[in-house]
Image (cartoon, rainbow, N blue to C red; front, side):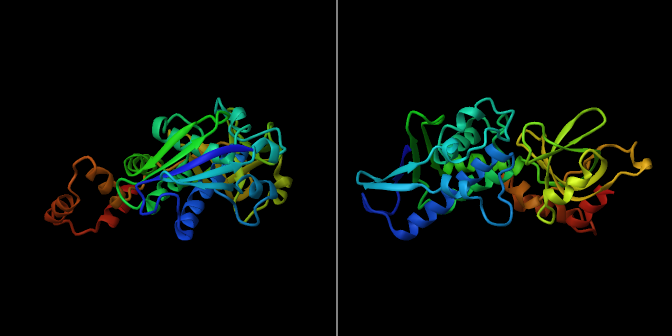
Length: 317
């Protein structure tokens, strides 16, 4: 078992005590982040699918509280090693240099590792995506004040020994999350195949030998797609992205055999126009000294008849 420690500083708690409600909130946020990080490492996508969780996943994120100490509020934690619970020898993140080492840590330690990457290497780590970044920013909901701080401390076997979750760093992660591309609808033509490295996953091989990772959407099952393996297909789905803007995987929503006339269409079609959420944009710019109210007033003074939403639709055309 791997040993870890959680230290809560500047919370509205007595030293050496924690309420059930605060413990429950902390457990929810930490477990959600750890679950997404483990799934990302093992399968290549962080967001859990529908249905019952596999037994190994339940076990690997079932941390044990072994002690509650005074000083601040200090929780002693034990967590199983991922490789001892998950027996598969293959994993999903092939472009993360430390991926194999991470299997020999715990899900708790992996959560710390992902948080550290979000602070120090947000655009160069294959371990991060929009879903995990949102799970990190969720910690802001349980901080009692601007001075509150959650320290996650791991033993020497973990890749990240200590991280500090506080308002300042969470705002930094929030900016990264907002800059990370939303999932977009896309169309792809290519040959559907099973990934060479992992039988439970698929890939679409284009004519120029690009290999695009693919997963069935919630309305599909990999067993329903086996008849398409080795065939030229047209896939409609959602493209999911990494923090650096590169494609991470395609979620298959619909699949059909490609017709002859479709053999020569552009193989990966992504929208040129990026939808902009003005509220998010204004919030991000405010941190850089941008005045949202003044911006809205200037738009109003231009006396444009179309609404902002209509203007965006026009730009798409």
